[in-house]
Image (tube, rainbow, N blue to C red):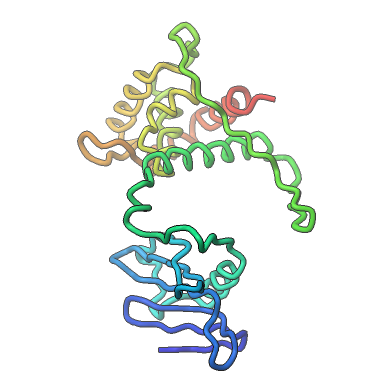
Length: 257
């Protein structure tokens, strides 16, 4: 099925794949073409740009679709946005194309770890500045907020926070932070939770075991890191003082200044 929208956006949809682009005029091929392929619950997007040697892939995105997949291909609003983004995206056509060799060089674990740090940093900032009025970025002046990512340093036992251990109350707090880190793909959630709370990692491992025994935290299987807060766990977290402790901790420890 091929559809040309009034905006000049052309979308061709197959059973498990498709292509979209902005028309360039009669008999002309567009500069940018975006394709997608559905593999189980994943959708793979590839953006190609015209070069002297044909169309060269310049970006690749893996989208976790699950049951949210569009039965008729792609939502028109998303197609329009992706076509617009493809036209704006910078690309060095002189470099080697995206392929097996390039993908093998990517450290997925490191990328997910850094993503977890960045997301956690914004979560903490949001807690600290929840009462501050929203200020939109002025796109004409490119006034973006400077990103300050905390640098991790190894701490001695003497420098650890002695107020947090692995009591039931502490286990809830630790499990909540652990689950947040795990949800971003961080495979070292225990170590990073220990860093954020400034405690010995052994207390995180103990707290996670306690939380799972009490049904507060799910398990990803024997020997696997990760987990999500259960309905019971979230209820216990909100019922007690864990939420206020978490917010106080963020304001006092995570974002100083």
